[in-house]
Image 1 (tube, rainbow, N blue to C red):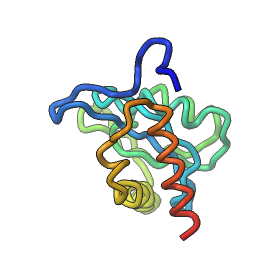
Image 2: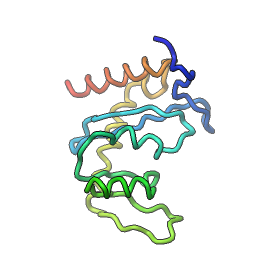
Image 3: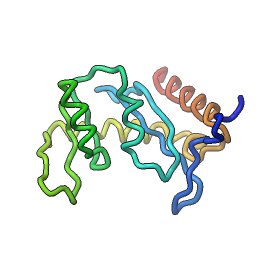
Image 4: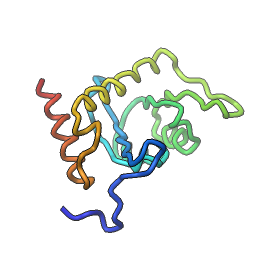
Amino acid sequence: MSPAPNGDQAIGRSRGGLTTKIMALVDALGNLVRFTLLPGQRHDSVGVEPLIAGLDFEALLGDKAFDSDWLRDELAKRGTIAVIPSKDGRIKPIPHDEEMYQWRHLVENFFCKLKAFRRIATRYDKTDLCFEGFINIVVTFSWLR
C-alpha cells in the first residue's frame, strides 16, 4: 500500500487540527452508494463531481454547501431535481422543495452510524486506502445488521 503519487492522503489542516472529510452519496433508504475522501479544509463542492459521475437519479438532496451554479446546471442537464437550499449570500434565492429536503436526515443518520465506530470517527489510519477499506467494512457490517 503505497501513498498516492502526489503524497496526498486526504488529510487536511483545519481549526481542529488534522482532519479528513468523508463525502457520501446515499440512496433513498440511507444506504451508501459511493463515497470519496477529501482533506478537511477542502470545500464540499469539490467532492460532488466524482460522487455523481455515471449515476442516474431523480433528485439530489444537499445542504447549502452544495449551492453552486455549476452543480445546478449539471443536474438540470441530467433532468435531476436539485433539492438544495440557497446560500444566504445568493442575490436571487432559488426555491427548493422543503418537504423533500426533510429526507436529507438519511445522510446524517448514515454518518451517525458510521461514526459510532471509533476507528472511523478518529481516523487512526495513515493511508487513504486503509481508511477507505475500514469505511467499507463498517458499511458492510451495518448492512448485515
